[in-house]
Length: 254
Image (cartoon, rainbow, N blue to C red; front, side):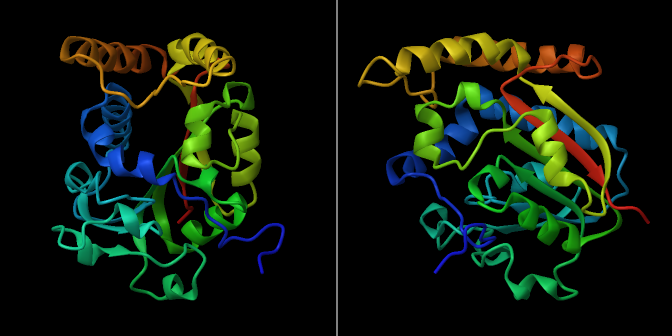
C-alpha cells in the first residue's frame, strides 16, 4: 500500500504516447531545443573532463550520446516499456525506483546528475531530490527541468501522467534544505507561454485534442528550434517571471 507521499509512487506516461516518445525526443523541435539549452548550460559550467554522470528518467538512453561529451553516463528508468532490451546502452540503465537502497552504495556516486522533466512524475518530489542528492559527490552539479504553471495543465500533462506543474517558487521549496546550493532557478520557453495557454483553452473545448508532440514539417521544426534556442540565449539572465518550463542549476558544496 502506498502512503499519501510515497517516494516510490511514480506515474509513467501512457502507452500510446510512450511508443512515440523516442522519436519525438530525437526529432521534435521542443526536445531538440531543450537538449541544446541543457548543453549550453553544461558547457558554461566549465566542468572538469571525464565526469561520471547519471541521467534520471533517461528513457531509452535518449540523451546518453550528447551527455557522453562530458564523461561516462548511466541512467535510471522505471518504465521498462521505453527500453530496447538489445539497445547499446541497456546495461547502463537501472529500472529500480529512485529511492531504493540499491542507490546508496558507493558505485552509485556521480559528478553530474540530470533530471529533465522527471520529478513531476514522482509523488514525493522532495524525497526524489534527496535521493539524487545522496548520489551527488561534493562539488558535483545537478540540472533539473520541470513543466511550469498549473494554469497550463493540459492534455499533454494527462498523457504524461504528471502529478503537478511548478512555479519557480514551488520548485525552490522542493530544493531548499536538501544540502544543495541553488545556483539558478529560472523559466525557460517564455515565448511559448501564451501559445501553450491558447492550446490548453482549445483542448478544453474539444474531444479531438491538439497533439503537442506531433512533428511538424522540417522547415517549421527547424525554425521553431532555432527561435527557442535564440530566445533562451538572449533572455537567460533576464528575470522573466513566466515560461512553460522551470530550470534549476544546483551544486553540492565541497
